[in-house]
Every structure is written in structure tokens, then in C-alpha cells.
Image 1: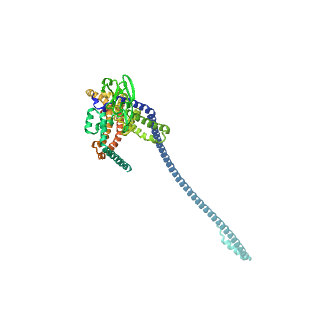
Image 2 (image 1 turned 135 degrees about the vertical axis):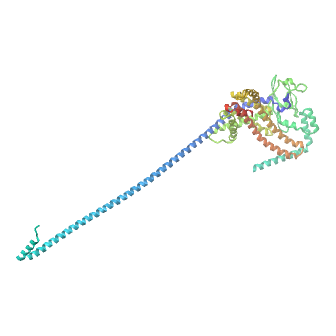
Image 3 (image 1 turned 90 degrees about the vertical axis):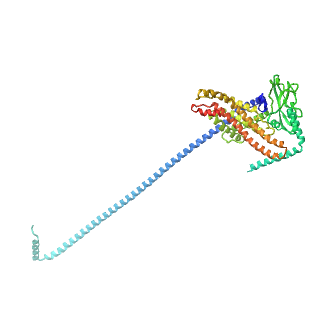
Amino acid sequence: MLLEINPLVLPDIGLVFWNTIAFLVLLIVLGKFAWKPIIKAINERESGIEEALLKADKMKAEITAMQNENEVLLAKAREERATLIKEAKEASEKMVAEAKDKAKSEYERIIADAQLAITQQKNAALTEVKNQVGALVVEVAEKVLRKELSNKADQESYIQKLADGVKLN
Amino acid sequence: MSCRRIKSLLVVGFGLFAMLFSTTLLANEKPVVAESAKQEVSEGAPAKEHAAKEEGSFNVTETILEHIKDDHSWHLWGHTSIHLPVIVKTDKGFEFFSSGKLVNEHHEPIVYKGNFDYKLMEGKLKIVDANGNIDKAANKQFFDLSITKNVASLFVSVFILLVVLLTSARAYKKTGVTTAPKGLQSFMEPIILFVRDEVAIPNIGAKKAGKYLPFLLTIFFLILVNNFLGLIPFFPGGANVSGNIAFTMTLAVCVFIVVNLSANKSYWEHIFWMPGMHWSMKLFLAPIELIGVFTKPISLMIRLFANITAGHILVLSLICLIFIFKTVFASAIAIPFAVFIGLIELLVAFLQAFIFTMLAAMYIGMATEEHHHEAHGEHKDLAHH
């Protein structure tokens, strides 16, 4: 036979036989008790890792969303604060202005009252002065007239004089 | 840095060892040569005996082939060897006996009388007639199912694989999947993942890879362990299992069976009636593709056998240089080269296991692939490579 030229390339039936048995035993035993659990475990771990990564990504997205929300809230709060401050300022200014106005009007009113009182008192004083002056004048005039009219002639001439002054119109 | 220092130390150590060893060899040259010549007388054919005697040296080819070939006993050291059991099947049934009965105290083959007369002829057990010649008629019904050196080494590798892989499988069960792999488990896991992610999934596809993964992993680890055992020069190793054509043939046949059993309709269609071709081209391609069905596993068989055997022959030849030149100084060249080739062999051991598995996965992938009709040219290319 051609194959018998070199014993190296002539397979021994014995080795083929034992090798087939060995390979089948390995395939069955390892397939059942080694490869199956190992591959299962590796797959489980890989899916676990994948899940964990997905979860982490999700968490990250959530955190980002939350951060964004926080920022929005913060901006809103800041805006609100600004408006509040502005409003408070306005209110206070308004109050101050109102108080000023009120004070001014009160002051004016007090002044007006004071002036009124002054005018009244002045008038009253003037009236009294006038009355006193009038009484004095009447008293003096009475005295003068009493003296003047002590003689009859003078009295008559004076009446005449007065009568001349009064003209009938 | 320290790694490199250790390496050079190793080389120096080997060199020194070889030098000391060969000096004593030189001193005792005459008796050693006489002994080796005597051994060859007992083993070699008559013509070779003559040549060996005349030259007064040992026969390199014989020595190398002896190391590569299968044997009925497993040599340990000096004159000590394990006599492995012989199992033979003849038309008179099974017979069991120790291979120690096939040799005398001088390690020369003698006739063992069982149901037939058995004798080792050039290392192989044969039935001989009364004159000591091979009985061709009786040998037709004769099957040698002995536990030879290669079979025993194969069993060692099976034992190693079972222990290692079942231990790591238990580790997964015990610690669960939430903890990181530890010890042996962490050593095996990257290799398993490598076979899955670099061999199975790219060639077969993620969907179907799981089904063939146990087969591919078993082939890969069996070849890998036997390649490594073959590189160990002493007892638990030393056999040349993965460089034996019977071993590679068995695995190749397994791949052939798996590929053809899992082949789908479109695979056969692409072999016998290539779609998208002119009918004359189809007629022309069919026989080529059909031959390809058989050449694929045959190429697997020959590639592994040739690579591992060649590596062993190379290392042995380099060592034999010392004995050919019969000088101490030959070791200065031979030993570093042998160490260098040995390191390359380590790479080859892994590479060949990978290539065998890779090609097996590729053939399975081609057989199970769902063909889409717009991509025919591409598939045809794949099929031819």
C-alpha cells in the first residue's frame, strides 16, 4: 500500500478507537458539567453588567434631568426674589411718598389753621381796639359836646352848622 | 528586565548541562556507541544494522522517528519504562496482556504466544508465523486496541481537562456570578471567552454560536492540552499525540460529521447547484465544491499533524546535532536554537489549536449560514478560500 511508505501517516486503528471514545466522553461530560454552567454563568454576568450599565446610564440621565430641573427652579426662585425685592422697594417708596404727602398736607393744614386763628384773633383784637377807640371817641366827644353845649348860643350855632352840613339829597 | 535575565540564565544553564553531559559522553564514547549500535541491531532492519555498525555512530532518522512514533511502553528514564497494557482483537476474541511480555530483558522484541504469535515489528504489533515473518492473512482480522503511549497520554490529557474544567465550573456554581473569577477560574475564563468571542461568534453568528460552542471549546482545549503535553520532554508528556495522524484524523472526522449534519438546504444548494450562475458553470462547479466538502476536514487533519510533527522533528534534529558532530561546541549552537524553537513551539501549540478551532467554526458557519440572494459573489469567494 502507498500509505505504508511512511508509518507516520498511517493512522493506528487503536488510537482512532480510543481517541473517539476520549473525545466523546469529554464532549458529553464537559458539555454537561463544565461548558454549560460556565457559559451560563458568564452570560448571566454579562447580562448583569449590561443591565447595571444601562441602569447607571438611566440614573445619570435622571440626575441630569434633576439637575436641570433644579437649575430651572433656582432661576425661577431667583426671579421671584428679584420681583419680590422690587415690589417691596416700590411699596416702601410708595409708603414713604405717601407719608411725605400726608405730612405735607398736615403741615399745610396746620399752617392754614394757624393763619386762620391768627387772622381771627387779629380781627378780634382789631374789633376790640376799634370798639375801645369808638368808646373813647364817644366819651371824648360827649365831654367835648358837654362843654360846648353848656351855653345855649353855642348850642344853637352848632346845630345850625350841622344842619348846614346835612344836605338833603 | 528580570525576565530577560532569567531567560539568559536558563540558556547558560542548559548550555553548561549539555557541555558537561557531552564531555562525559566523549570520555565514554566507545562503550556508549557500542551500546547504541547494539540497540539498533535489535530494532533496525538487517540492512540498517550493517550501516550503523560500519559508521560506528547512531542513526539520526531512527532516533527522531522513535521519539515521534507511538510505542507500547512509556519510557521514563535510563532503562526504566512503564509497560502499557496490550489489548488485541482477533477472530478468536479479545486478549489482554502486558507489553512487558513483548520484550526481553535487553529490550529486544520477542514473540508472545497468545491465541496467535504476536511480535513487535518496527514498533507495531503484528501476528507472526512460525518463522517470525508477518502473517498477512491473520493480520487482516487483527485489531490492535492497546493502551499505547499516545492513548495513555491522551487519557492524561482527558484527566487534566476534566479536573481543571470541572473545578472551574464548580467555582462558578459556588461563588455565583456576582464575584470576580478567582484562581483557576480566572485563568480559564479568558480562554473560554476568547474561543467564544474570537472564534465562535464571528464565524457562526451570535444566534447559532451557543449551540456549537461546547463542541468548539472541547476541540480547542483537547488540542491545546495535547500540544502542551507533547512539548514536555519527560514522563507526563513526551508522547506526540497531537502530532499523530490518527488523533488529528479523529478530530477532523468529528468536524466533518458536525459540519455536514448541521448543514442547511442552502449549503447543499451552493455545493451542487450554485445559484446565480449559468447552467454550464453550475455543472462545472458542482464537482469542485463536492471535493471541497472532503478537502476541508482533510486539510484540518494534515495541518495539525504536520505542524506539530515538524516542530518535534526540528527540536530533536537540533539536539541530534551534538551527536552528529560529536563535539561539545555543537551544543553552543544547538541548545540555544533548540530553546528558541521550543519557545516558538509554545506559540505554535496555541496557534494550531486556535487555527483548528477557527477553521472548524468557519466550516460550521458556512454550513449553517442563511444565504441572501444579493450577496452570492461574496459567499462563493468564502467557499473557495
